[in-house]
Image 1 (cartoon, protein in one colour):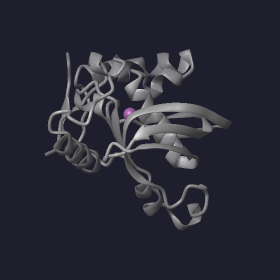
Image 2 (cartoon, rainbow, N blue to C red; image 1 turned 45 degrees about the horizontal axis):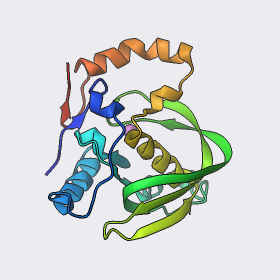
Image 3 (cartoon, protein in one colour; image 1 turned 45 degrees about the vertical axis):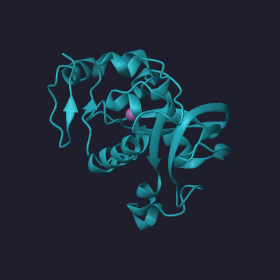
Length: 192
Ligand code: NI
């Protein structure tokens, strides 16, 4: 089942999400719905707050980016062919390496894409779908997506990284999104 994606302006996107336990109601079904929602909206990552659940869980699939890459872009990122994973109760242990820019977007803030600088590597501890504790280091686009999705669990959005002047220029568009004045080809819920 695809779930409606909450648009910018909904307070759930600004909450600090809470850890869950293995007995979280209908968890398997929820994760299946997260995958379905992410793929049907052509996203590469989706965090639970984006479907109105303030819990620490996100799904991501960096494989998709590499599969859709032009031949000339092949081999550009060191994390090819990418990963497809669910992260439960994640905690970033360390961010390291040089900051680099990538043009990011977000399903909750449609039609806006902006360059965001983030560190190259992320060391993250999390539970996988079987609630097994893992600690892994990621780089490249996989690290990029993980950092973006993790931010959602902290109530942070990619537009928070923009320079004040740039943000000011986008304010009209951002306000329109929160009011539902945006056309998207996936289900969204607007709070105003
Ligand atoms: Ni996002």
